[in-house]
Length: 246
Image 1: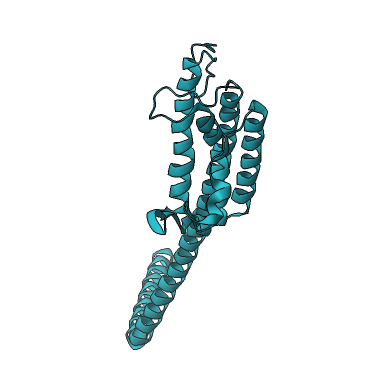
Image 2 (image 1 turned 180 degrees about the vertical axis):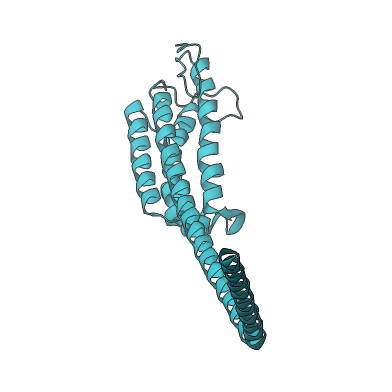
């Protein structure tokens, strides 16, 4: 019997303890809700400010990365344009030299047609064209009728050695001018004129591409036809020739 009363007393105390714990938990929840309701405007302001600050930080980071990427791409473009012309100059110099080495001496006046260029003039033109890079970079225009243009006019030479020397001198000047120039300068316009009348005006990099390198390939190809018609061997340039199959 005493044992039974003891068990009932333990049960009563346990139930009383659980009730007290539940009451405390309820009071705690009510206090928390009240505190939350009291601080809601302050918390809203805090979260809004935090959101704005986060947005600004993200914007600043993205702006920095975009600018850094732009600068890197700009630097890459600067290098690419200069390097492109320098590498092209070296390639064109090699195959132009191969062509000059095949030009027969003593046939400067030969031409395939009365309207065609003479062999001597065409060979000298091809040999000196790489040098045009330097005056296109160093000067803003070329007027063929101006007295100052005399040094740029093509003059036939008598020997193969003179052709090769003219080529080497022009390539050296072109290389020096390209190494010293900038992307900004290559974007500036360059003019070709005659008698004071502008015949063509385009950005320097376009004129270098069209008026020098593309133009050089055109006349060098023309010269290889002259070589064939004069029984001179034709060098392999961009691909094999009948004289240099391998």
